[in-house]
Image 1 (cartoon, rainbow over the protein chains, first blue to last red):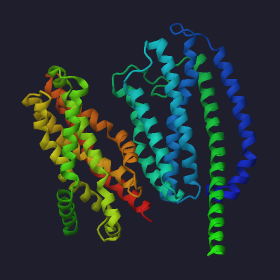
Image 2: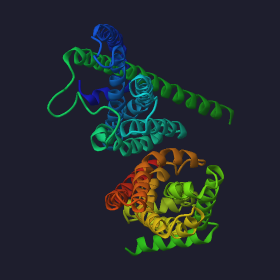
Image 3: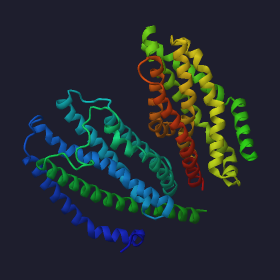
Image 4: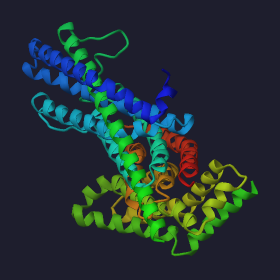
Length: 246
Length: 222
């Protein structure tokens, strides 16, 4: 089944209806395994037990950028390939991405208090993620401000693509500027510098969070398709009532 | 080519005539800069130290205010549809409109800077540096802001949404503008590096802005 077969909303709804229970189960299992491994991980020699915030903070941060990437591909799908469900995917992903970014900021802030002595610091990584959060909010505002879904989709697609410039800035901000936030230790040239005792739970949690996003995203897409059907039916109903009256 | 120059001339003429974008932007700039000492206090040394930041924030907010006018006036009387349907590529028309907007609304901000520098106790060197960075940075603000203006064109009260969309994109311009100004005032840091990046941002906006704005207009107006 190719991507274009999924372009039919009815087929998409049928497929996701079959797929979602499995995805929910897989997400729950992986989250349980990841959380267990995180709890069992050793204490850091310097940070003690607070290092375990990393197992929630880092996957959230990775996902906040990943979701914008997914939305950018969906934006290309809307503008370039005219895939019928691309705008549904983009609209469903925006609040999820905003939530992940918000959680990354909050967990990072809570981690920063014992580690750096401050809840907030205007360094490059924190600032650029905060800007990412503002851009998510702006995007959601744009979605809500245009009445017609397909016109809103195209406007949001342009804004998503323009905002994608922020992703490399976030990723490389810790290298370009002399900052407080820790530089890259997992996805860098020369391999990870993280010890395996920490790396394994981190990767398991990352996969679990990605599955969580996939599950929530598909569920949100189903809701959006149904919402649009309701809207169309309401419009038809009103038009018919108008015809009967007039 | 003559179509584009006609478009530029028309836009400048409209902006300078109807209670239009040009002067009101400068007045807003003046108002914001005058408001700052009321909030910060009359400490002249502090105001001089904050001078670049105050002037840059004022210029940013003033250009945000006038950006609203860029497309909505034409959209309301139907000329935007004509511009979209004409033979000149929409990207070039958008670039021409942005250029006209910068000449009518951005350049006056730069010209007003020396006067406002006096209000903030800035010396001649600082004022010149800030004016230069504004000259290099206001095109970036206009061209990047054009993207938000095009996205918000069909919304009747899209002014606030425009600000929310444009401000995150203008943050790099603000950062490097203030960094260049401060570098010129305090000796050890180099002025050239942040200033070059500021010019680069303007050039980047010059290219990306018209394309993104044209895409938004094309998709948003049908």
